[in-house]
Amino acid sequence: MERRRSWAAAGRLPPALAAQFTTAEQAVLAVVATEVKKHGSCNLTIGHIAALAGVSDQTVRNALRQAQALALLTIEERRRTAWMNHPNKVEIVSKEWAAWLRITTGQNSWSPRIQESKSGLAQRREKCQASSLHPERWRHPLRGRD
Image (cartoon, rainbow, N blue to C red; front, side, top):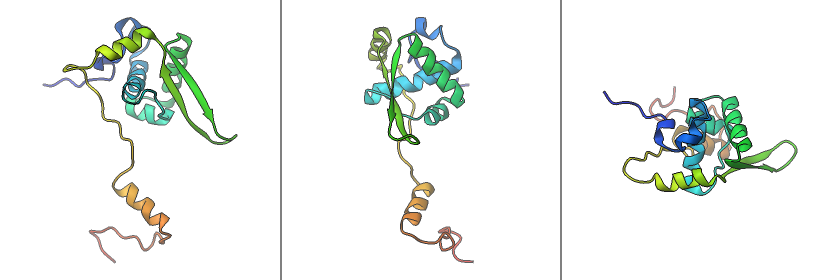
């Protein structure tokens, strides 16, 4: 029987640092580490990180706050207006963690798939709304008209 790999088992956090966090918080930091490794910084929303890690929004906030207090990462809040913000920009500043991420590439490293754009039904629905069609006119392609 094949064991499921968890985010913590993915090796995205050095063992000495991982010992300071719960398993759920390690999952959050592994998502952040994967994004940083791919793009240089993590620009995902709290809800997106929570969904990928399989934890609640509050767990994401707690993990990021604790990691920032330990000087492992920096969080840049990007305010746009009083009511709307861009996603925070999270960067890893810990030399130990950054070095760990550089050496964990290879055969045994595991990188999760992160969905970056919408596809399928959600994308068709947005096109339908953009073309100002009425929702009543939209029919499922296999069902046809009633």
